[in-house]
Every structure is written in C-alpha cells, then in structure tokens.
Image 1 (cartoon, rainbow, N blue to C red):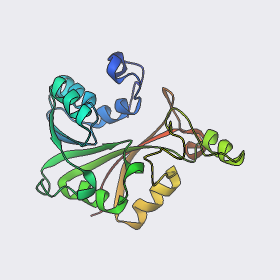
Image 2: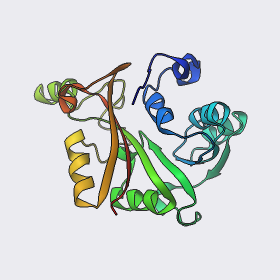
Image 3: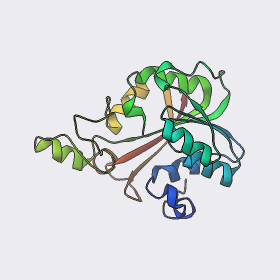
Image 4: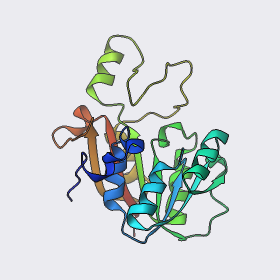
Amino acid sequence: MNIELNETILQDPALKERTDFAAIAAWIKPGSKVLDLGCGDGVLLRYLKQSLLVRGYGVEIDDANILACVRNGVNVIQSDLETGLSGFESNSFDYVILSQTLQAMRHTESIVNEILRVGREGIVTFPNFGYWRARWQVFRGRMPVSQNLPYQWYETPNVHLCTIDDFEAFCAQHAVRILERVVITADRLVKLLPNLLGSIAVYRFEKQK
C-alpha cells in the first residue's frame, strides 16, 4: 500500500491538520458507500465525495458541526453514537469510519460491534497512548497533553485511552480481523517500533469469518 501523506489529500487546507485522513482515503474504493461516525464538520466526507465519488452519510451530535456539514454539502444525521446505530440496516455500507472518536466512547465493545454490523469493513483512528512522548509525561507524573491529546485531565472527553498493543489485543479477543494498519507521527509513516514511536494509529478491519 502506497500512502503519500504529503500529496493530494493534504493539499486541501481543511484536511491538513488530520494526516490520518490520508490513510483512510487511501483505503476507500471509488463509488463506495461510506458512513462516517462522529464526522465533525464533514471535511473528510466532502473530500471522499468529490475525489472518489463515494455516497456518504455522517453522524454527528454537535449543533455547530451539523451546520458545518450542511455548508460542506454532506448528508448528516444528528444522533448520539452511544445509543447505537439502530437506524441503519445491517450491511448497508461498504465502510464505517470512526476517526479519533473511539477513545471518547463509553461503550467500546458496542460501537465496534455496531460498526461491523452496519458495514462490511470498519476503519478507526485513535491517538496512541503508548507513544513515547505520552509515556514520558506520565513518567514525570503528569497526564499527557499533546496535539493529538489536547485536553487537560479535568476537561477531557476521552474516557478509554489505549495503546496500539491494547487495540490489537481487543481485536483478537472480540473476533475482529485486522486487515491493514498504518501508524503515523506528524506526516510520517512509522514502521519501526510503532507502539513506541507512533502518535496516531489507523486500522481497517472486518468481522472474523
């Protein structure tokens, strides 16, 4: 797989701050049907729609983001992911995306199960709590604060931070088959010691058959 993190996708100013979007877009087949959970302002779906002609829907709860999605020409449904995806039929999407929202979900098992019920494949991205800078801050006695973990401990929406190794153990225990993994720091792919040197993890997976 060839992912050019500094080309094409990141030329869009709206996507420049989210290098994980490049990895996601590299996996999406043209013309696919995509559901983006916690889609924010809809810039990823807008890009996929314009460049890959995907048919996409977003799910978002924040009012300001709903308005931003509308401005970006994205079909969006206002809903709380914690209540599940009962409004969507099984196997109704090719890909279901959850980008940098997994760590904020209270019911991790439920949302992963719902992703794999609704979609043929799931794609998730999350900040790697095993990244060396995060470990160093914990070693110094403080909770990590960084570009990917920007909140102070008392205001963070993150409830289930995990490492790359944690997520892969979760998949093994829950009959989830990992198809591909990309680990990123800044705009660079990380292949050596990813659980130590990678700040963002991106996974494509399916239900184990």
